[in-house]
Length: 257
Image 1 (cartoon, rainbow, N blue to C red):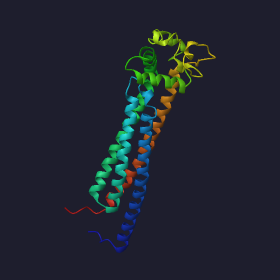
Image 2 (cartoon, one colour; image 1 turned 120 degrees about the horizontal axis):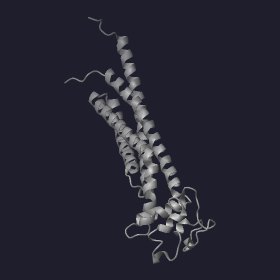
Image 3 (spheres, helix red, strand yellow; image 1 turned 90 degrees about the vertical axis):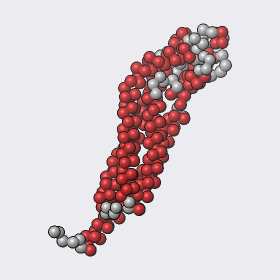
Image 4 (cartoon, rainbow, N blue to C red; image 1 turned 180 degrees about the vertical axis):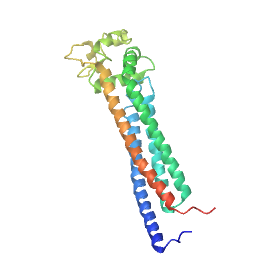
């Protein structure tokens, strides 16, 4: 049988445990802040840019943002739980904390995978659906959200039509009396005024190579990169947290039953 632990060994073990506690507490505080950042990115994606989401046929982009919001909320709750588990030195709470960290990690991996898949198929989706959406649904009954999104898209990105301004020649709305002889919507105009869409000369409307498809694709790709970077960053931080948790768990004495 081995020799009983000396006072030095116990002191060394206690110091190690205390150091782990403070490291884990610091991690949890940073983790809690990171959860707020993750939630903010997800909410910003949905609220600030929700109009553009309505122009996409796939829900993958929105799903990635929802997963980030859910992960961020769980992160903030987990951060508080981690602080409690750390200072109370309860192995059961540490086990729950570790499982929550693992669940969040898997959620972020899922969001990253969805973002990557959507990144690959985005160009094809926009080519197939954006033009049809713009010419078939613009200014149509019960499609106000599409109309608002298209107008905002053309004004904000300074573009006209899905591929070019000539796409509007096939628009259902342009062919009606409601259009009042306009060749393009007024939102195509460089200086938007009522009825300015009657004239489609380059001096009056935006003539951008690639049309709005290229602009919207670049915008969404940039946001997917942000979503991916945030997810990877938090996932790396979580790995550190899980290592600290395992070390602290092993340093604590087993609870009596």
